[in-house]
Image (cartoon, rainbow, N blue to C red; front, side):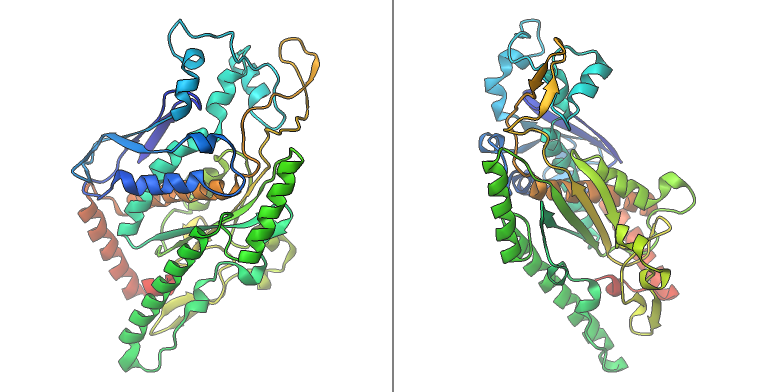
Length: 423
């Protein structure tokens, strides 16, 4: 699969075209709109989110609620276009001398982009470099999230830090080892496995409900309130805040990705996907940078085997990836987002044209967008995981893909690995 997005922040629409989706996937505009609404939410968002009410439209590739196997075209209208059409129109009548930006903002693509593309008006840069483009990427990722759901793969994101406030380790998203049910004897093994999966699904449902009720997408209420307080303080000072979010993916078998070439390693592609999101400056997998301070005996996840569970681990410091390949444990990714570069108390800069010192330009922006970035992170991770699944299992239709998936799981069980160990 592949996709492209197009559109400016204050242009008429954002557009995306996806090629390579299997036919027969049930998808609705409402399903995507729910994810778009999540992206627009979160404590600390700016005035633009009060204007836009993102709604997607299918322009091709979907009929009667199912994908056709043709390229899928998605469109999201920019409601703010009505206030910008005289400036941003594509025609020669565009008022290019209005709303000109010549003061580059530190931390943004403004100066580098203007120099690269020989622009005198930085608006030509910021309109596309804007995180407004992530609305299109969430729409794209939502379709592949839906595809992964058909395979039993679930993706959950949570915010674990905003500014100086961090979610305590004891309140972090539980790993699979905490969801174990004892197998009393061989006779009740099947029933216990079914009960364990049911327990996991109930846990996942409760987790999603808790996160949906948090304005900061934080699992712990007290920590979430402390995060909101920090955002309020930053807003009062005209400052902005960054943070850290985590993405977890459950239900993936071992064998996605490859160690054979550097660019086929799944950790390479997942890290690149997260780094491609605006303002992300660091990515960890599993225990990440903490591994650098520990000995190997404290880092590597020991392997165990039992007839009822097959291969399993008691820890997941590798974050579900070893050698660029999924190892059957949940995927755990973490991304660090820098503070938004647009500040209401501007930093010092230099005018692009006159070269005189000025306070940087102020565009309408968020104080903190970490919860929104987490939703975007879920979407880009869903895309990469879906691509990896299609590479591994193929299939021009959903039924063919699911049949290949089930055949592979049956093969893995013969080899000693069972899907339940990943739940």
